Image (cartoon, rainbow, N blue to C red):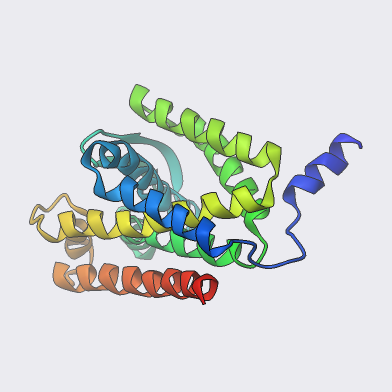
Length: 235
């Protein structure tokens, strides 16, 4: 097998849909529950949720024509992504808005695609994004988190075990959706002008309660998607 054949073999989706058994799914859900409910574990896992949050800012910023120059993760669940472009306008609003919904959207999409045989493709895309993100890391902790994520995703990609990939994506998707709710609960109590809804309110003169409601709506839709996908396996 040539290197190109090996590459295609690790990118291509499977011909079958979900291969998760009920016991395997219950195990995945139990591990996801531990990740988000046990404080010492959550303090580590929340860095992954923050990573997706910040890359959500950056990804949408790039899509709307802004220049992504760097990002930082902090141990207290906060972070910061820097994109350069017009100080106001639709692009700035879009890139600012997508941070809090990003973990929920990414988690729901991952679970939905994994259930349809696209786990390998999702893993490949995630690996590429993480590798590209290394050049924009701006702190030691951020570098450590990204390198650990690359190592774990790279191993998952290289081994190309369809069942394991689907299990990991479903578990990660659940953690991201629940993590999005936990992050959102924190920002709903944050009245500072520097928070995302505070910045959005200043940019648009639309009250922060409207922006918070939009975050809740996206998280709710993402949750419904994940619950339905899990229910399909449990039937």
